[in-house]
Structure formats: structure tokens, C-alpha cells
Length: 397
Image (cartoon, rainbow, N blue to C red; front, side):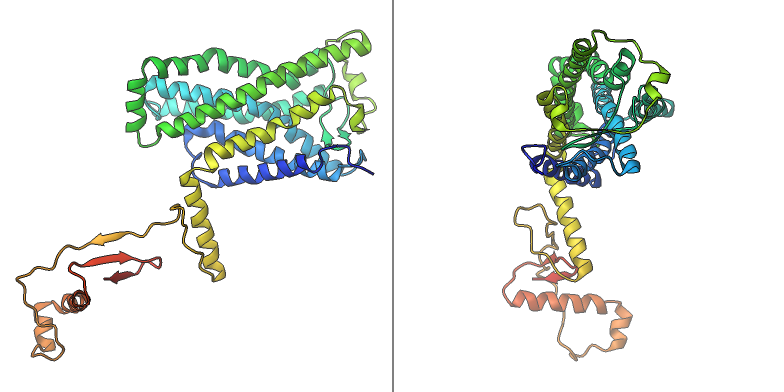
């Protein structure tokens, strides 16, 4: 049977590549600061979603068979969590950027303020998504899960006002709050007080101007991807319900929703708004590629990848070639200065110095080092250099 997705295997390959990119970003140290907690939440849940939907698109590429019940339960709940985390993370990022520019400090004043901000961000980025994907989602979960041919496990929210609010309102409310409350303020502060902001960003060791604008660009991309798709999904859900049933109920009722709760399989051609639904699936891979471009392809990130490769190659006993792009560990040169011209030291073995004389002066070790230095100088060097090789040894030349 031919794949239900005409572009197969483009979508699953893109999702799996996106998950690998996000994993690389997570393994580096560039988002492990308290003021980047929103980016960390976004990368983690987006990594899980990209990995799962890529696997789903391969397993159900040409069928809508109902199977792997436990896996689909986990996959659909992670999908629901990510649906909430994406707008929440954008809100956390823009809010943190506003605090940085307005307070002129990455670090909040006082321990109580730090704890309060940490509690707020953990509530927005972790606790609320778990509550929405857990008890709130179960209220409007019309069947256990759906299987869409070509794409695999799907969430199964009730097509009602309450179901729409629980599933899609987060994709509209929080991006709107970000755009109307914090986003304009950040732009205004950076524009009107750009000289002070530039001095602050260049003076603070924990944040750079480049990293600041990378975070700002990520928030902008997420807003312009999440908000339009949230609005389109709400409009299509309402119009589809009205055209099919003639009404859009407030809530379908607990008994009606949780009766006959078995999973449902749907072939791809039967979905409503096929083009819109297909486009909305690409928002997560596109966002993942943007995150990797902003945080995973920097010079610092490439240096981290090279160090990791060097470490792994050391474990298996092979030595990687030097990084020609300059991202690998650089060789340091330590100048020890010129040898004093007026000093005369006899460096020939057995030239009258006894071990007792050396022990008495405490200079035996220095004499041997200087002997090697003079021998090197006779071979053509006018000054003494000490170069650290890749094995952390010292070579005189």
C-alpha cells in the first residue's frame, strides 16, 4: 500500500533530524542559565515531540491500524503537553528579556525574588502543561486516542467550547500576551535606550549582546508560528462543527464523551482541513531547525562538539585530525622571555660540579632545564618558548 503522505519520507526524516539537533543543543551548556529556563523547556518537550511524531510517521505511513496502546497513550499526552509548552515558553522568554532590560541585570535582586521568579517560570513551563495534559484533557477526551493514517497517534479532544479552550486557547492567549505586554516593551527599551542597553549587555559576564538577540529572535519566530496556527485551528474547528452539526455546543457532556471510549482509526483523506493540518505539523520541525540555527551552530557549540569527538576518540584509541576551522582546542604558546645575557652557567656534565654542590645550592633541577634551553638555542632559537601540545606536555623550541 502506498504511503498516505505524498511527501513521505520527507516529514519523518525532518522530524528525526530535528530531534537530533535539539538533543545536541540540550547537551551543550548554552541554555543552562536561570534566565534561559524558557528555552530549556521548549527544547526538551520539542525534542520529545519531534522524536515521537517522526517514529509515528514511519510506523503508520501506509495504514491507520490501532496498535501499541500504551505507546499511543504516552505519545498523545506528550503531544498535548508540547502544545501548551510552546506558547508558555515564548511567554517566559519574552518576560525574562523584559526583566533583563528593565532591571539592567540578569540576576534578580535578592534571594526571595529569585525564588519567586523560579516558581513562576516552573509553574508556567511545567506544572500548567502537566495539569492541562492530565486531568483537564481527560474532561474533554472523547476517545482514548486516534490513529491518523500517515501520521500515527493523535489527540482526541471534544469539539466543543470547553474542548477548544483546553486544547487551543493556550496557542492564542499567551502569544497575544507576549506580543501586547512584553514584546513591545523590550523593543522600546532597546530602541530608546540602546546605548545603555548595549553597555549593559557588553559589561555583564553572564549574558552577551549576541545571545540576547538570539533569544529574542527565537521568541519572535515562535510567536509568528504559534499564534497564526492557533487562530486558524480555532476558526476551522468552529466552522467545521457548525457546518457538520449546525451548532457548536458548550460541552458534550461527561457521559456522552466517555461512553464508547475505544481508539479510532482515521485515514488521512478523511481529516478536515487537510492542507492546514499538514502545514501545522511542520511548525515543530521548523521551530526546531530555527533553535539549532540560533544555538547549535555557533562557534562555541562547534567547539563543544569537537571536544566531545576528541574525548570519544580518545576512549576508542584513535586521535582525530585537527579542526581546520579553528573551533577545536587551540595550542597555547607561553613566552618565557630572553635568556639573561650576563649569566654564565657551566652546563657540561662532569665539569667540576659535584652532587654535593648541587644539593647545597638547590639549583640542580634549574640547571638541567636551562641546559635543554641552551641546547635548543644553539639549534637556531634566539628566545625560549614553551608550547603546550595536545597531550598537555611542554616542548621547548
